[in-house]
Length: 285
Length: 318
Image (cartoon, rainbow over all chains, first blue to last red; front, side, top):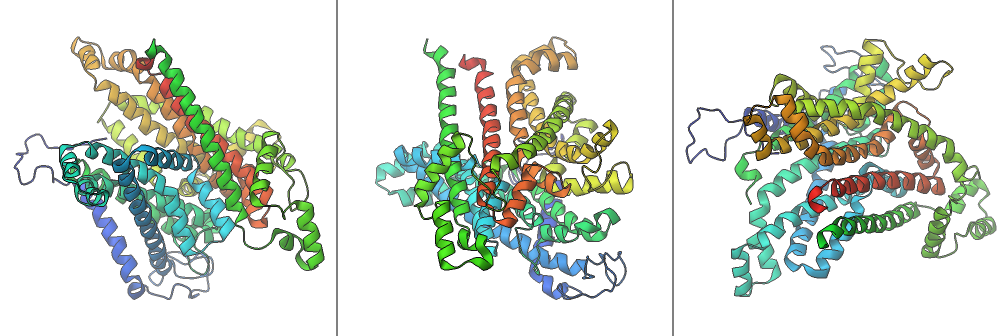
């Protein structure tokens, strides 16, 4: 998994060692920041209101007036993608933070306490891992009905077991180290051990894992929206934009292509960024 | 003596976990669909929902019993092959699913037959010529396919093969499947799409497995004593990588489960996933539950198979 793209004649100084950051990673980070900026400042940048029909033609081509064309009702695609960025990024971020926070805390507690608590929790969460993620989302969202809080909770529930397993594996390793034993001998309680001894030592890999899980969540969210179970009209995330305009596919309309490109650019650049994180952050423990 | 018993113990343990998982999964599926808002009897009766009619229907459908006893009854029914009756058209669910399941299995089977040889060849050769242009291109392609949603792979292949190249029909299926070429054309787009999704993962995992064995000292030794690159990989490294590769194949095939849902929707393919999505829109509980169980069981089978292969193929455990 470890990829080192080192230059043979590079002089390794203590300052740069381990914090080198390849160009691919920087490009990835750039695209991520760009989308984050667009999501935050989207309403100020959008040329037209995203819900308004501004063109008499449907599936309009790219033009000076409508940079990315118009959709199946004649709405401006650029404005709708900017709006979709808020939904896609917002929902995915909220659920990835929920999933990772809960998973990491539970994982560390299980590693520190051990015993039956660890066994039962691990078995149970492993069992939940046996449900295909898209299917789980589909059944739950179909059952409760789709709304943004439901989507966030469902996606978080889907990815909690994976995050738990990852954090537990890391924490078990740290837990056997001398400084943890010393802290325990000092009489420190579980909360202290988790917060002050273990968490700082698994932070780097956990953050990298959070990035990967973010990609998975974006994919499942887009999949659900594509099936019509995600963000509901008149609002739309990127997956829902593809669904709305799928009729334009056989015309090769930009209305289908650009939302797809938006998803792809986000997920690929997060992957690129995580793959090229400085080794010191990735493998800190 | 103890060592010789090890794999059987591990296998038994793995099967036990699978069984436990199955119970948790069926519990989750049953109660997730139980959460459906509104009273099923009221929804079914629609305009005719007088209190007496609702009470009568609830009684007839056994809805007035506690959820747990309905769950156990449902589970026992499943074990005996009784999937229940559809709420919408009163047909046995087994009958509704039967033909659709065959269709879905055909799709999955064809994809497997096509994707596995291609993916293994590409994965192994990418590992053989590691860091070459070929390897880089394969890596880029597989990463791109993995990091985009399945429906995008589908839309992209429609765009390329149907719109730009005009080789294949775009979104139609099963218009007339009387000749071989018509069948091939009808299956081509879904199979190509699913094939991309499944093999991307498989190529990456195969490549990683082979490279891991190439990095061991004994393979390096083979290279030092003058074995050619292909001999080094095929004769020395590959036999030891077979276990992880088989594991990778089974694990990647589990991506079929998610992929099938999207692909059947896009291409309007009459399989189980399409049936299930239609059942979701009509709120047909028994149908949704049975379809979800089919998907969960096949997913579970594949990941358990992957684990079993990994255990059995590891000679250190024998």
